[in-house]
Image 1 (cartoon, rainbow, N blue to C red):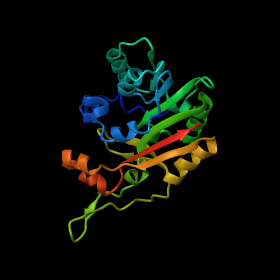
Image 2 (cartoon, rainbow, N blue to C red):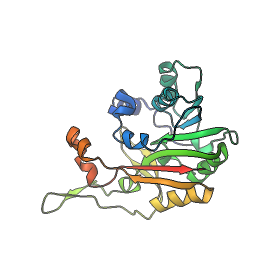
Image 3 (cartoon, rainbow, N blue to C red):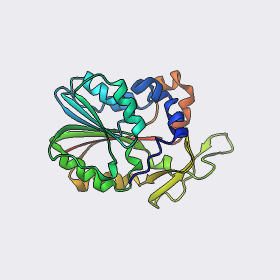
Image 4 (cartoon, rainbow, N blue to C red):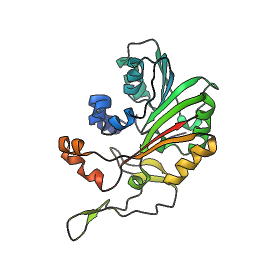
Length: 242
């Protein structure tokens, strides 16, 4: 079973106060880049993996999706998503993505935001998604970039000119990495970029877009604190097609 950190009181309280939790998709730095990867959702049957508070699920319905099925391991997340959603075509279910079982050829689009780096059996999940999607369907997801997941401690230092240096800790050693983020003992699954892409290819997906996200000039003007994202990518955006 995947680690359920979101139902820990201290973690849930911290996460609920984050910009992306308060302002939804517009509060997520990577959202404009993710939105540019989305196909037309009109009439689509959508599955949202790690749906959290349901922000994307509600967005998909607003874009004309026929139905949305949101899945998350957190009871607190699902309770909030249900409370904030007033549409019978959106359904939510508590589910462990480590053991995902969806009906074959039942969805036209799949989405996931910053959830799959918690999954140990990534290959199993990808195979399940390939079976669940209709031919030609798209799957767009984001994860923490593996470079972001493998820094040394402390995470960065500076060179003689004051520029940040982000050394890596055993980047090629894949597996569980434990960190303290909003709570102690948060376990994430580190995989090399090549492993992630090759797992998708081996399952039968065609790679359509890979983006190591960093802010553009306009975003930096509006959010100068994002400048550190130029030093190393935090997010990895991937779009594949069945």
